[in-house]
Length: 451
Image (cartoon, rainbow, N blue to C red):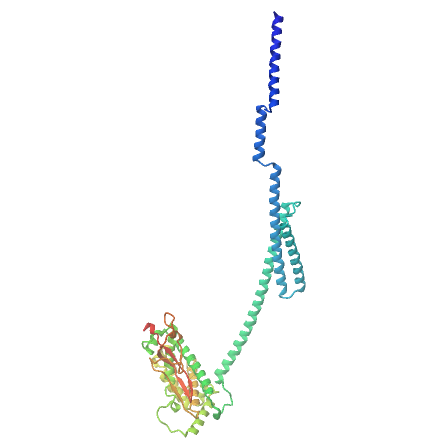
């Protein structure tokens, strides 16, 4: 029995093994792989189609680094060209032959390097054998050095320009100091000697309108000097200058606040030139020689006084025609209340009444002005033809022939259009006619926009 059981078991095992062998043989013949092998091949295919290999990834990173290093070298080369060109410009002024040659060589070398980089880029022959990281760092260092060099050159250039400007300023300051010194000396001589800026060898027969014009300009200058001193004294004494100006020229609206000085100048001119057309400023008739002798008389007075300090002349000739003129004009121009408010006393007025000359800055400025007006008067009476004085009435139309405006704002309206019919508010400085020559009077024009 045992032998039977054993014999039946062995054939069954053999059949099973043969069956597996047949199945494997059939799959091999039909090309059907086992399930685990199929899954493995499928996974390998998916991996190869979706994710690049590590070699491809390294190549892409290296190409990017090479391009970045190339751009860094390009920008470093451009910075080097800029630095070399800046050095070349700096070496030209002041001229430096060695510096120019050195900068030129560097500039040519850097341009060649840029040209080589261009050719490499166009031919797509970028150097892949170099270390990109090292090249990038070196290029950055070179670019920063070139930028620093450029800034240093610019700093040197600015320093040289600053030194040049400082030297020019020092030179101009020295010239200004010299000019100021010369002007002070001339002013001192002018005040002490009374020169009129006309030839010393002037003769009666050679008088011309130009002499009168020169004398007139000096007169106006001295009048304005006295007016400026008067206004300063009034300000120090607490005067309301606007109210004072309004009391002199009623109803006048000034274009600017500081224009009220023209009202004081107008008042002084009216008083000091009153009676100018009459000999010795005396309206009453007095016995005078004939015209030829009278011309000689006033010309001699002109020559006698023009080079003398007025205070010295007043002390020398206290009863002269000029002394009487100076005394009468001071008493008429400087009111007792005005003098008392300015100086807290009437000492100057009392000395003038006694025929003396107060040695105060205020009176000396007045005497200088009076001298100029007196000389202009004597010169006018020295001509062999008539010299007449004129002024313009308030409200008259402006004429460029006879008038000179001290308020140019009146020629434009508020919208900027020209004013076609400006009107005179008041005459500041009178004008003169010397034969056919006209010296314009100076006028202040109305502010029609505020009237």
